[in-house]
Image 1 (tube, rainbow, N blue to C red):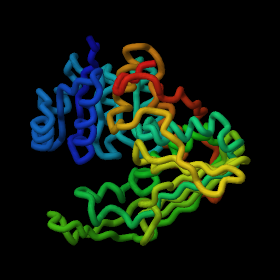
Image 2: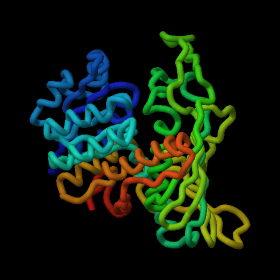
Image 3: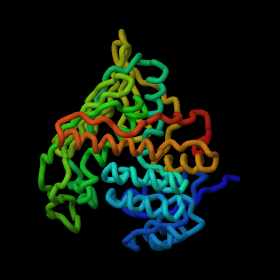
Image 4: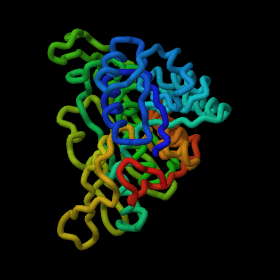
Length: 372
């Protein structure tokens, strides 16, 4: 019989449905409570996904039965809610980003260490078959020593489609803090720790207008408070050097394309699928190849959001490290702020964290088990 880990959800907005739907794929997880500042949201999600308890945030944190607080609030609340959960003696797993600045991230790391609880953080898409297969190719020398990379997330922004677009343009939002975690987490898992970064950033479109059809705030203008177009270079400890660009200001961008990350090695190149997904195709082209070849997935397909929570639950039960670790999330947060700091100061930034890649996903276990 599976020794279930009980989960309480704080924040029942748009992304919560994805988590709650996929949590049902993992026998170790049992979602037992929902809370939201707008009680009707919590009630709606609980009814939709058969969650037995709807309560206030304070009641959820005081519930001794809950092992993990799943923190799906807006970015500026991620660290404050995590600190509340840690103070209550609970493990916590947060949506990305880890915080809106590195000071928040450090506070969460220190509090968790003092309290002896685990902290996890999205994204968990790197645990999918796409990024894991790409990592296996690189680790086994499939393209030789990595020399360079490109990583592009270019779009026009979210105000034409997202139900709550305002927070994307507040501090802690923007394309780097919104989509950068997917790209940087993937790159860290593929290439290892970062040695140095540099950046350039601008607010390209200072005022946005909500254009979502039938939106209750249709026509409302949003003042952009954080850069909406960021370019940077990253030098990894292994010597690989490349370019990353994230933008909410580009018309006809390349975000929709299949391979937004490419790794170039001494003996070939590797097309890496969209890091905002789990199971995209991986392609390789070695010296002498006439064209790109598909790489068969070496890991299980079909995972979705909540796999990171489930992996942490298994890690709690077995005592091993969990893969969506606080240390990894802080390395990403530190790098994201580093791009903005570099853009402001006009000089390269050296990360604070000493990042270490954790073990890859197991390829041999039944779907949903995860423990190795």
